Amino acid sequence: MNQSKTTAKDFFLYLGLMIGLYTSTVSFLILLFQITNKIFPLAGEYIGGTDSGIRISISILFIFFLGFLYLSYIIMKDLKANPEKKDMWIRRWMIFLTLFIAGITIAIDLSTLIYRFLGADDLTLRFFLKVFFVLIVVGTIFRSSLRDLRRTSFELTRKIKIEYGIVSIIILIGIIYGVIQNGSPITLRARQMDERRVSDLMTIQNQIVYSQWQNKGEVPASLDALNEPISGFVIPKDPETGESYEYKKISENSFELCATFKTESNDSSRSKSMVINPANTVNENWQHASGRVCFERNIDPKLYLVNPKTVPER
Image (cartoon, rainbow, N blue to C red; front, side, top):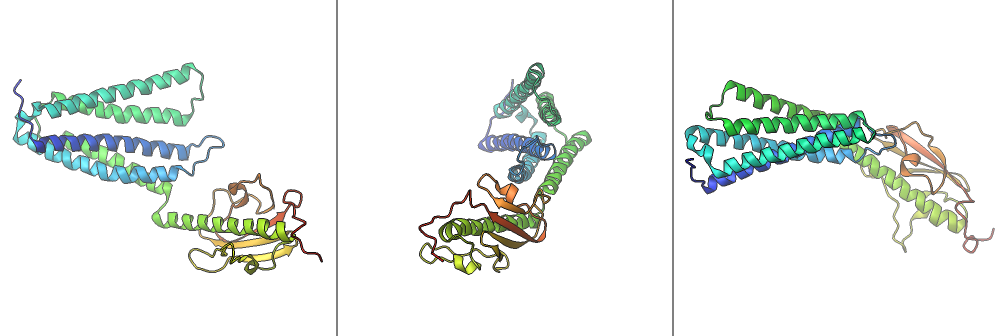
């Protein structure tokens, strides 16, 4: 076999091509998995973490897939001008390694499906979708690598251009759909600001309960009473407008906090008037719609005992 000499340029071109292919494949599968998890969540599953996964996958996929296409074009052009380079060791190693990894991945994917089927595990729709995605994506790579190994002509035929075009369109659709599911940058910033507002309200509530109620036996008449120069506590303000949050004392052990939100939380149907209980989670306490929303809080004296030594006599 007449093998062409591998230059440093050839080595790094094929190394970059391999990195671009593997990284794009993994990122695309992760993107599909995250979108599937968000569309078909399991009962009681928290899906908020899929947003960051979608963003990371899109960012990596966009850059590395473009790099893969560019390096593919350069290598194909070089092989067309120098057909003897098809037998370079770096090219053959890359193809055989890709075939090996793709074959192992397909075998593991099918084995997992059979294992879960025989074990009567919960074969959900999203599990079948993930198995299908792996088979299609990795199977396409396996078929393309096998064709590259056998090919003798490196003309950019119409068929090859159509195949690259179809793959590019599918990946572009996945990226666009991921952006839609994840939300635009403007929407994401609005959500982040709303999360900051909820965090600020939680901080104010904790200061009212643990500093004012448990030490003084009543909630403050205004938020100004929460300022504590010794401990360094400063009342949080709206992260965008810089305005103070609305506060109203209702009774000795109840109060109301209000803020203006830009987005709607996952479930705004829950009651916003609740007894403060350590067992309640953030999601249960701070659901909100967009616009001005008020949260009424009633402190349970049996759960939050007042320190009698710090309550002034009346």
